[in-house]
Image (tube, rainbow, N blue to C red):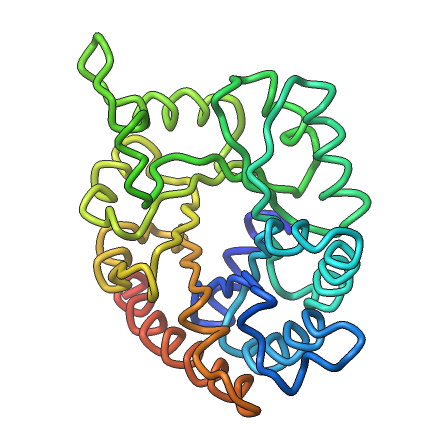
Length: 272
């Protein structure tokens, strides 16, 4: 999915919600556990209930990799079930020497039909270039994350007075374009979004931290929206685990619809 298609889909759907499929098998409704693939059964129901209220899904691969081969099978069935109208993100946080990154890129862009993958930039340009080589695919670079440990490195002040995360944003942006690079920016640091927009005004931001982590959708939207929207705001637990009984999918759909309704209002403000 290229940038034009992504922007068109956002405005057609009237939202920029990304539903995070962080499917923890220990939290699944009990009535699903006796089936042959409880994780996929859960995901399928969540997708069916939320697809009209979101425009993207993010699969956190750790929740599937921890289950071994069965987990990978559940993940592959899930990503292939997501409609092609929706942007598919592998939240895998890969990044290694060039030939290894090339294999990661092949895994998620060829073997599996993802549109985007999250990567860690610590190893530099040659670790990210293999992902950027794929047309109409997106590389989502960790920029400023929402966890407490981000203070350990991301907020360090360099010799010229810049913060390390600022250098990461500016340098990495020069390796690609606003049509193949996005950046992760945590919602619990929404007050930093105005500054981030001075560094990367046109790039999309993938924003975790809404809902269960306490991030404010209103603040993220106020500081982060640009002329093309420029945001994919992720909600995981707040949507997929909105209910725990046999009506879990219905509750997830209601939660997604609430987020989408608020986003439609913010988009109207941007477009005038």
